[in-house]
Every structure is written in structure tokens, then in C-alpha cells.
Length: 300
Image (tube, rainbow, N blue to C red; front, side):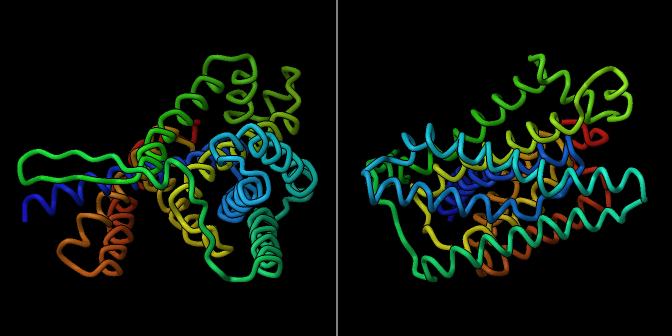
């Protein structure tokens, strides 16, 4: 029994890292623009299909496809902010526009992307059989045996690579200074000469680019299917709120907690009931600490 719990803990940590990698982009977008991007899951799904097409048509491994898909998603993110969200933000400044409009526009975009890909690819599950997904990491000590796909290990490590990269950009670069200024007070930043809406677009692009990296890792061991975005998008929202809106370490911590609770909980109750445990934990944390585990007033 102890070995089973230990295995579940390890698997939960690995899956939690993948959750955190997916949630990081959403956390950065909210931390800077204060926009809750309901198309986050759809963007993740879109990236997995781009990797699928690159692999099936040209034999390009998703890890190599990063150099193609990540810039595409970055540009798509910037375009989404510039042409869909920025006009509403400008309208809000002059007419006290209901912030719900920002939620609805990203929600509508997500539905549009999901339905478009459902029309094109149908609901069949697709896989990308790569070297990392076909080979396994194995550890054995006495009666204890742990084995998992290398792709899951890479997905876990990717959370920290993405997190460190985003932290460095935001905290150690000139662009990061503008991003931090805009996230703290966009009016004061504008007075100081910062192009607020351009900075918003770049930050949104960075968040979606981070999703593209997570999508490469996810496509290596999970199914490629239009509803994948709905599943992981929903969990991403819960993880970001649990860890603290706008907190990069919080997104990783929240993902790890979700993965561990789901995996270890499934050893004692059904898998569907163990998923419910994450919702219960989510509500408890919000009741005790509404800003989330590592929330710091929304700063990225």
C-alpha cells in the first residue's frame, strides 16, 4: 500500500508540473492585463494540432516544432490583444464599459476555435508517437518499481523552464520593466511614456507563447483532440486562482498541488471523486486566503 501511495505521489508531481506549465501563460496574462483569458484552453488545443500537422506531414518532432509554433502563437496572442481586447479596453476608459465584455470576447473566441477544429478534424483522438513518448524512464529499488514516459518527465521540467524564462523576462529586462509598470498602474506608466496597449499585446503574446511550449510537451504523451483545451483550460483557471492570480511561482505550486491531490486521492476513492477533492481544496484555500497561496496583489 505504501509503495502504491509513493508511486501515486511521484506520478502526481509529474502531472502537476504539466498542469503548472499550462497554467503559467494564463497567470502572466492576467497579472499584466487583468484580463481572464477564457480562450486559454483553445489556444493550447490549437498548438497541439499544429504540432500534430508538423509531425504527420513533415515528420517534425513537437520539441523541434517549438521553433515554428511558438512564434506563430506569440503573433496570434498579440493579434488577439490588439484587435479584440484593446478596443474594449479603450472603450471602457471612456464609457465605464462592463468588464464582463472582456470575458465574453475571449469566451467567444475559445468557442469559435474549438468548433472550428471540431469541424475540421472531428472528435477522433489522435496521437503523436515520438521517441520521448515511446521510451520510458525506469527506476527500481527492491520491490519498488517506477516507470514513466520520458515525455512526462520533460513536461514536468518544462514548467520550471517556462517559469524561469518568464520570470527573467519580467524581472530582468527592459521589456520587463515596462510590463511591471503597466501591471501596477497603466495610467502612471502611460504618463511616463510607456505604450500601454503595445505592452499589453506583448504580454498577451508571451502568455500564449508559453502555452505553445506547454502544448508541445502535452502532445507528446496525451491525446490530440478538440476537447483537450476545455479539460486543461478549466483546470488552468483553478490552478491560477489557487496559486495566486498573476503569480508565476503560484501557478507552478498550484499545478503540483492539483496533480498530487488527484493522483494520491485516486488511490483511496474513484478518479472522478478525487478530481472533486481538488475543487474542495480550491474552495477551502479561497475561503482562508482569497488572494491565493502566493497572491501578491496581482503582480506577475
